[in-house]
Image (cartoon, rainbow, N blue to C red):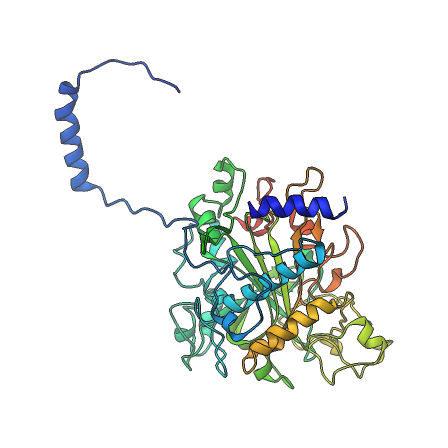
Length: 482
């Protein structure tokens, strides 16, 4: 009812861009009974027990249903993960945006806690909820092989096994810790942004690295429908429809599919680790022909600089897109124009003159992550094209205050993109608000407000398809099947 009410209210109050039977030989029950009994006994003696698959999206009773007019206090730190956003009147565009942004902060806090219902730990940069999910490389295996269970270990490339201490590092995420015993080990292999738009190079000349992870409902949907292989996708009747988050009554509902994309910076000279969520990692570079890059792997420490969460809910079949950054990533264009700059940024040199450091330009090719620092001293000089709104800044200040004494006080919401008309007959993207949304670490080179050219999560992901060409429900993950 809430979803229907919101859609109708918003559309009314806003002007937004536009074989029934089988014949055969009949035999009596008396004739069949001895044979059936004997067959059943034989099967019982030889067949292994049937193990039912895990529910794809089980009902839960702990959906976070905090309304967005609730004061921002430390009580929210243990309120849990929202199954879908909540709203309060008035249902105008600004207040609905506030509801979605408030939902984004609740989601960010819950997924970055060390366990469900816990708070981020002061002075202890614990491994997060979403880092215990499965990475896409664990799901889309060579030769279309079936993935292991959701709670199984990460898949680690053989090239990483030669690293000193690899015996304690190679089983990652859930079952093995690094030598210090405090963090599971990540494996990151991607160094370029979507559609090969280019890598991002930090002020030490290192490539930013990326990973995509999915929660259990999304993982089980792919595995149980065999969408992890090209053959499975061809056999699938479709359409692809990932499970939806929903609140049925009180706090009872379903979580639905969530995917997280993270951008990581290699911690190096001049970096203050206390201002980043960090993790030991195996930085893996798969072999490449263009440019010619050999397979390689090395141990590093990564710091989180960018974070996307996309959540499919009953109100938002186009998914809800929440995006965050580390607060020292870049200045805005307005900051540069006013010379209102911080002493240090992750991806901007305040002491470099514009003619010497062109802004928002991709690095020159070849893009070879085996060569670091980047040749000829190149470092990315990035600015934020679209500034944060005043309302977002105010909400960020409130939530960052309750995260004091944790690394998470150093992260900020950029915005949340959501469908204003999820059932639009003319716009399959659901008429998103805001129209454009870019994270400077994840859509560095597609910032702006140019239709079909500038970054929009929904507009981009609306084009996603699997290996058969069938629409893949706003995710490019399925195109990686082998």
